[in-house]
Amino acid sequence: MFQQQWSAKQETRAYHGEKLTETQFRNIFKGELNAVNPLKSTKVIEEEGVTQEETPWALQTYLAIERRLDTAVFRSFFASSPRQAAQFIVKGQVRVNGIKIKQPGYELKPGDVFSVDPEHVLFALGRKKPSVKESVTLVNRQIKKYNNYLARCRKYPETMWRLRQNHRRKHVIFNKHYTKRQAKRNAAWNQMVNKEMNKEIDDVTPVRVLEGILRNEPYFDKHGTLPYPQGVHLNKSLSVFSLVTGKRTNANANANEEKEVEKEKQKQDEANKESQEDASSLETADEARVKELVGRYYGKNESSPSNKSDVKQLVQDIIKAQQEDIRKQHTSRLRGENDVNEKYDPSWVNRLPEKIEPIDPAQAEEDPASVKVQLPFSNGKLYGLSDPKKGYFTPWNPRPFLAPFAVLPHHIEISFKTCHAVYLRDPVARPGHSEIITPFPLDMHERAYMFYIRKRRKYL
Image 1 (cartoon, rainbow, N blue to C red):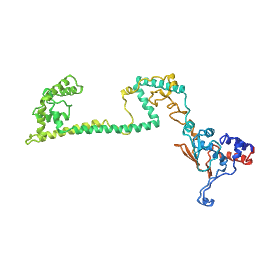
Image 2 (cartoon, rainbow, N blue to C red):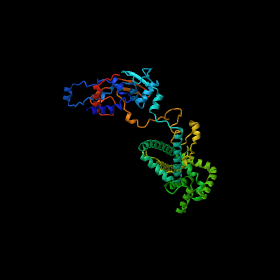
Image 3 (cartoon, helix red, strand yellow):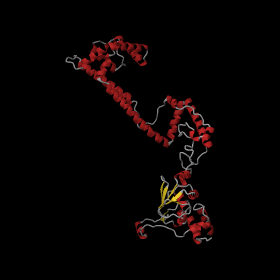
Image 4 (tube, rainbow, N blue to C red):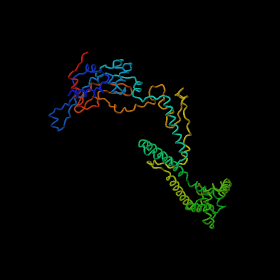
């Protein structure tokens, strides 16, 4: 039995107050164990049919350790260990109720407010600051890999494009943020497309449509048709042109000629350019005639042509056809809100930066703050040395493996913004729970309590 008690005491004391000697701990150890119970009596609890868990009294064995100032500083995440907390206290970086305390064993009372210098907290919980040599070596390694990546992108643009897309989909967090950004970009793109579409639709007015048809009169005189693609638009435009000008269309203009005209317009070959030059040369001379003809049908004249209603009806049909074409053209450009798949753009490699030169170690040793890192995913400074004057990793990052110790205490109220904390009360035990943080089970604490309660105090 004594061997079990000794082993339990040895293991638990390695975590609770390991820097205290046995004599120091026995002098502060108290056998009274604090606990609280619900106000309901056992009879009421039994009538309700609720099974009440046992109170872990033995977990209060090391209550005296939790009252110490150095332990409270450690529990508040102001230091990475109780030993480091004791160093801060000895150096005068800890205040209790505004008074500087230099005794790590100072016993806190309920309601005491203690604080630690924020710079020391950042140093205690921050990642280790790398040396200039280590930082330059790491950054140059990143630059070398990034330059190799740029070379592969320029050599195999389509393959690297697909790899980038697959890489994005595999990373859940990055893909989530990318999806949100892409949804915003898609909404802005759709808004711009709709704005352009509405503007183009509003620009299609009867006067402009008729003026556009009549300005092609020189082209009609030369080719016997209008420079529009084959279809309803061409037929109705020819009808309007014939009704307004009185010129009849050339019936011998066969399909081959129409195809040739369309080909001339699409490819903008020499013949089409000449025809456009001819039209533009005659446009100025015939502008007055165009205005006069349009004024007959859409002006305020006492006398109007007999075919005015027919011309207006045909123009309205042309307007509807043009507006429908504009809608189809712009609707095909719209993107879905959840469409995150970008189409391959052959020119995407042109937006990549040029090759980055490595950093000179000698220059970095002289003045680390003056070194500019041109990597797109960096903050422009050496790794971990954004502020070389600080004694910790900058920009600040927490130390690795802090998660096992990141347990908020119930008896301390912590303000991480100001590095202040309030010792509310001594930690107590409740049915099924103890406020003292420990990695050991209840039975081990019971044997440790049995060891210390037998010889509570060892006098010097």
